[in-house]
Image 1 (cartoon, one colour):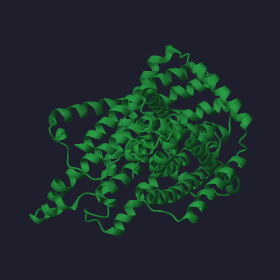
Image 2 (cartoon, helix red, strand yellow; image 1 turned 180 degrees about the vertical axis):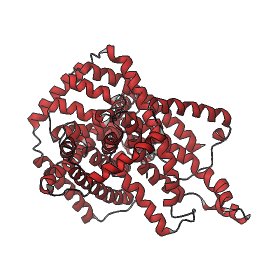
Image 3 (cartoon, rainbow, N blue to C red; image 1 turned 135 degrees about the horizontal axis):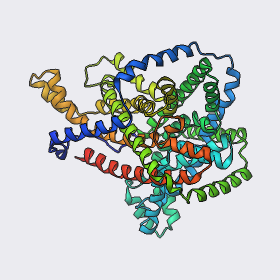
Image 4 (cartoon, helix red, strand yellow; image 1 turned 90 degrees about the vertical axis):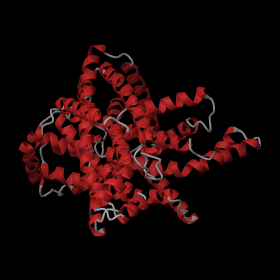
Length: 525
């Protein structure tokens, strides 16, 4: 099951969507996009004019220089270890939030709503901003990356799994309660067995994300292969940059492949033999111990880091309001970057989704399998790396951020669009075909009404994600509020960071709220 939705069956176009005044809607959208494109200075002619520099840059990177490969293995392993420990600690932190953030488990609003609020606040803070804060609190190195990934993993796992917990069967809970069992026993025997598959599924999903994020955290000083990439970029050693990027690409692709196979088995209810389950637990425990020992996780240092982090949070509680207006302006630009980038990716991913679908489209299966790998390949490149390449092509500014988000988002949108097309109901298609309708008419009247609501819901969900991504791309010079955050870090003025958080958190929470409501109406009709 995809983490972005609980959809089990494609639906027809909702009545409320059909009743929209389309002329008014089109005019409103045109005005919105004109405002957004002006804000990011989006100019297709400029892209075509200077786009050749991008391929020139790629040419300077080829052939990749793998001669320092022995020096890259250790940072690459550090990256994986950061992701492993970050996901592990994140799951431990998320579990109590999941339990106490479910209305079926905790019926007291005084407990439920504060826990939900905490989960939402944690989720609004972008991953790289966590990394910046932990590097300041704990110093340079992978330990800071582990702390950042832990909080990021906790936020995502808790949010996704608590939504699954709200939909579990209440009857086992009522049966256990009827025996006089206490709350802990109810959780142990009636709640955890039901949410465990979803919890594991979401944990694997977040581990995939953490691997991607960990590959670029070195850019802000959190260690791993990202630190090697940063050094190679600073020295303009482009063949080594390409070698490192290819290593990152291969690692992310392999992790995605393995994790997706396990997640598919969990979603489809595959029951693994007991011996295989124990072997899996042993492998996971071994990876956690290997990561902890290699990164030299020190309890005293962690405790000291928590103390420094508390001091840092205290400094941010005294925001520098002189920068409030500037923070709002930069956040508006982040919203514009996310909107334009997500829209471009949506327009490009729709044909990719149809071409990658193995049913209902008439595309030969071998060709569909080839296109199926396009989104998977694109997803392996983090936005930050793409942004760095586009900055080298077009210079600093919002345009590289737009292009980075647009290209990276094709990966997720194309993948899920293909899955949406593959599961449409065949009855309407066969009924239209029986009338002798052309292929275009079948698409217009039988296929499009089924897939469009889910395409739009997926677009809105991706826009929600990209708002957070756009708010930190400025750390590398790609516009938005992230540029103000990195300036504040250089000045050690945490009051400015506090103002930025005051702007980011409510904006992202409002977008999340309305995004969830709109997606629900789109799917439920």
